[in-house]
Length: 347
Image (cartoon, rainbow, N blue to C red; front, side):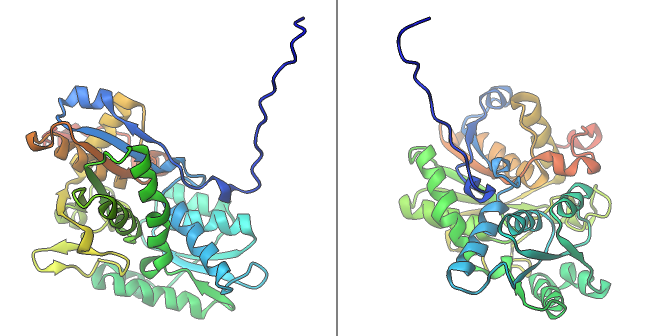
């Protein structure tokens, strides 16, 4: 036995999952790039490494803790209330549980089975709204979200609406944290940022930060192909299976689906993506990199691939935000290769 005193590396015990939010990894997809002959480099921001599994963890925690700092809520009396398609609800439910809050959630139509079961696991109270209110969401746009949320709020004593679509704290979560992480981890070498718009907080906050650091950073917003939303491959999916991202811009400008959080001030380009291209990107990433992402992430990756195929982007670093993983959508057979539609894809 050696007489030298053994050196012990001290560990660290965390005191709450709230301490684990952020600092998610950026991974460059070398094998994918080689397989597709990409001219640009793609490095994905893997947000499923957050403790509740998506980039919504960041805004859920920021919204709760900012409201606490302002003295607007406390776990002894407040019930948090939100209306959401899923990931925001899961994040809110997880942090409400960790902090001792009650959480009441109203769900949009078409939420995947996995996300429903996760909400049940976190003891969220699942609330139902009149069907006519829910149907308004995709007829009237973002304004209808607030109508549904107000309905739930009226039914909830001491309720506090977290209002993900029009909450400055949502934007701040990404301006203060996600944007700086991308800048620091790429050593300021990011050339193109790609993201979709659901609540608008991530693209607004990240893009604002990156443009302040370097106004030459190009921001590309992913938009679901309207044809695939109108005639979805995924049954019962009102958003065409893209889960959480919407068309926020058309030939007439900003659409009714653009949330208050969103700002076109920081956007350079909008690009439509089909569900076939989304699936193709998801399957290629799993095949070549061992990373299985969800539909909104697949859409962002598909746009990043199309950007990386352009001669003008040779050598440029492209960072798509990849919100969650594919395990939340296995009930929709997200993993299944549909050759009949992937034949239409150009990569």
